[in-house]
Image (cartoon, rainbow, N blue to C red; front, top):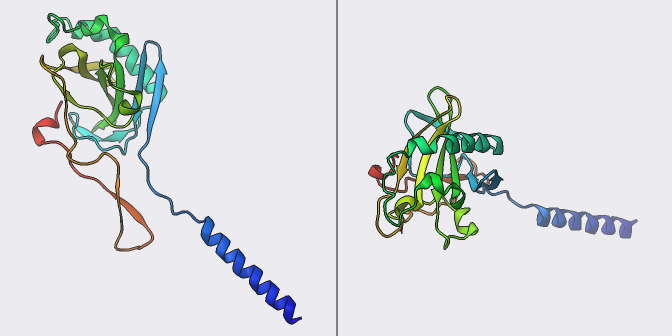
Length: 210
């Protein structure tokens, strides 16, 4: 009887230890999805991904789905030639953007406005030195490079494509981050086991509006 009790106690202790070893405290992770479609290839960034710019009348963020990105691409590719009719910053060795749409890899960020409209901010980059890993690791903001780098907005509710911005001429410069794009984790005061994400502003105020 005594041996049986000792054996049961040992087995119970092993069970407790095994349960403790199997428990993994969950941590929050940034999410980004690679997307492919007709004449486009890019990355969709999750609504919780910190960006250092806003859109007009912004009320929140959303994560663009494959269907929404396909619709935004259809609208952009249909209307970009008209929006780009002045060929701003596309002289000399700088490409005319609407004539080389397949050459650009994309990054997509979703916003909502105060009417609840879904707005996709689409970033277009033509730089063969950029790896897929780099393009999927963070939203890249640039200066210089002329028609090799541009971005535009698409309101999926109104079907409006607007806010075309094409980089100025000059050497390409990737704007540095003032804070890391991944979350910083710390324990909350109320619950020591609970973890919360802290984020911060990254660029200067002048660089936030596009």
